[in-house]
Length: 114
Length: 110
Image 1 (tube, each protein chain N blue to C red):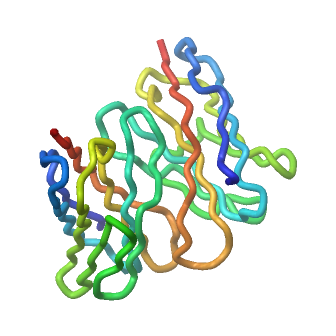
Image 2: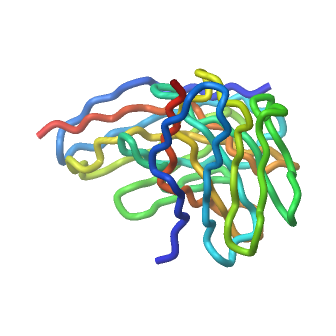
């Protein structure tokens, strides 16, 4: 069964450093998302991406964040200058076209900012 | 605005039935998803309701009342592996982002 994959599973970085989180969505999916979940808190929407551009972003997704689909398979989230409060689990998700279709989540990348 | 409420924790016994409630106040509400999340893992899809009524899928059923802003997830014949967090999430018209509640952590005891 096809699945969303994410790398790395765990990333440790120093405050102020740049990190790139990588995702490979399911191949025939057209809509891509990033969510994050701070430990013990709810899953929060960051950004949605369709047709090679951002469709929607949340207040969390400020100028320090960017997304890219550099080729036909990868979907990346970059945090330019990490802060302590960026420590969280970051989930990538994708879904096919059509309304009401479930979003399939990847296993997540646990980001720890020291 | 968006507000989704679920109980924080619930406990139940193996083989029993449990109902997890979710109330929402969501601008332009479109549909409601239930996801299961085991500790340290990704959310996995359980059900989707857009119309009023009950959707049944094996041991799991989900109900929606749009007029009351209310949904529940019903788990039957509970198994130990059902111990997990259950996340209620809403979507609105003109957006497909999922807005999650805080989740209900269910513990199933033998």
